[in-house]
Length: 112
Length: 114
Image (cartoon, rainbow over all chains, first blue to last red; front, side, top):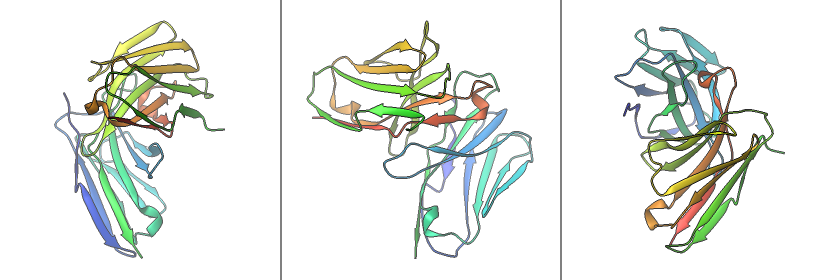
């Protein structure tokens, strides 16, 4: 079973701080996605990265796909309380693959 | 209305009971999935279906069964519930262009087996 390991597992920071979450695997993925899940809700897709080395920005969130397409990172600049939630990465072995492999999750708490 | 609707939202059941979780979607997608979420384990795939006549086991299908009644409906059953099936269950659909384009999840069913 392929595993996507995320680190850290928990992160508690003050509003305004920066943070980075990592997603690592020994498998090569054709694409990698990041989701955010809030309490009582299902995960919501934030971004998909496809090309090795690709960087995508979504307001204060920066996503990077590793050159070898085995890892990814999510960087949040000047965190806000609204960023609080569970962040999940998920990898697809191919565009036509039948299922995603989900990471173990990083729970982020941002305090005012 | 939500794109993917799960019912019930919460359920408490006794060990040994049969229980069904329901999922319906309005996105018109063919591919549907059932996952369970446990703390520290992420999301694990139980079953998935590519169309009404197609059912596939995921990595943790033992103790579960599914029914794809229509393109829009995909139900998950626990034949004889046991306490270690206590978890958060999610239904999802995937973009017809391919799994790499992302999933749309329902809001989940929190199941407690006592």
